[in-house]
Amino acid sequence: MIWKSTKSRKEIQKKFNKTSNDIHYKNLKNVTKIIGIYDDHDFNCNNGDKDFKGKREIAELYLDFIEEEIESERRKV
Image (cartoon, rainbow, N blue to C red):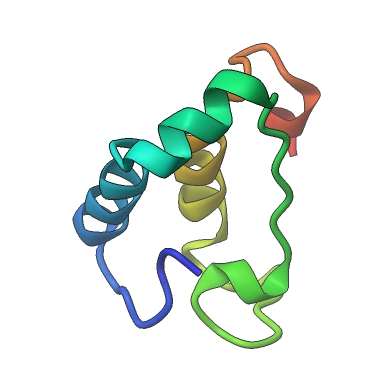
């Protein structure tokens, strides 16, 4: 989990950037289409729900990380 125990947007982005620049991740992206999914555990808390204030922000950072298209239906949630 990229953002486990990470509180700020800047820290989360920094961890995504580190992963994006990892040679193994780059190699994977060269041979595989990355399709990601996030759930309640990805909101930096167990069972994060609709009331979790950072939900949308973290989802956007994640969708940016996996290079989800801007027009994607997943961004309209």
